[in-house]
Amino acid sequence: MYTTRELTELVNNTLDTLHLNRLKPDNLYEPISYTIGLGGKRIRPVLCCAACQAFNNGDPLPALDAAIALEIYHNFTLLHDDLMDNSPTRRGKTAVHKKWNPNQAILSGDAMSIMSFKILSEKYPAEILKKIIIPFAKLSLEICDGQQYDMEFEDRDDVSAEEYTDMIRLKTAVLLGGALEIGATIGGADAVDTKKIYQAGIDMGLAFQLQDDLLDVYANESILGKPTGGDIVNNKKTLLLIKAFEKTKGKSREKLNDYLSWGTDKKAEKIKAITELYNQLGIKEEVSQMVSDYTENSLNNLKSLSCGEDAIMPIIELANKLKSRAF
Image (cartoon, rainbow, N blue to C red; front, side, top):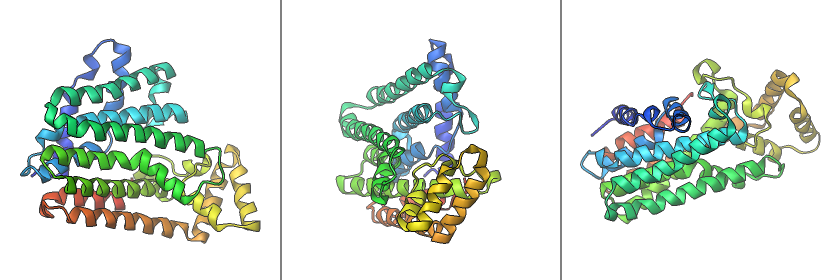
């Protein structure tokens, strides 16, 4: 059985063999190679391979092509997300739409999306393909749904915690759930286990995104690798801000609205003021508890799988690591 470290190395080595920078036309594939080359945690392909080996006597290799397809698709969503958000950087490097141009980001992203489906259709026989292509297509559309909700929330001040949770389920969690479901399916899991492992991935994804929201406010910048407070500066509707709206009334609401109106000339003051408000309202502790609860739900589903706890230990370790991560 491979460890998570070994699975990460396996995924990275396989991505390197694609030699995307050698494909033509250059202007289509260089942004793709650049995006994949930015790295990342490779969480989704690792989960896919780990789920496969759990049901396949410790062998993750049958799911490797699906894992690569998932990672390419994930990076496509990031490429388009940066364009829609007009984000200047991705993982500390210039975003594709800034390094090249918006049209190139659109086209290269589209190509990545198609590549992921092409890999699945070429690498898997019909009896496997028909079991994995539907969940892959389903999660692909759900991510679009989630992105649309996220954009719509920018213009609303009445977003509820339930709406936000459903949005991050669609935008973030379904890809983790789908990675586990697809990997387990390739590994030979039955319908009961694939349903359980999918839900484990959903809960893991919800915990992951909420921890991300917390890190943007409370992380150590030297560990995080980027400045904190970006969500506060941009008035992004994270669960922390939504909770602040729910918990403030009268003068405290007026104070919050005043903070939100501050521009970039008062960036540091805005971050400090809103962070202090979150602390006063107990929001950090509340969201941290939600991260723990979602992780616990995920672990409970994982431990109930028929393959046994030892077989899914890499997934359990990754779930715990995501909950406590500092970057």
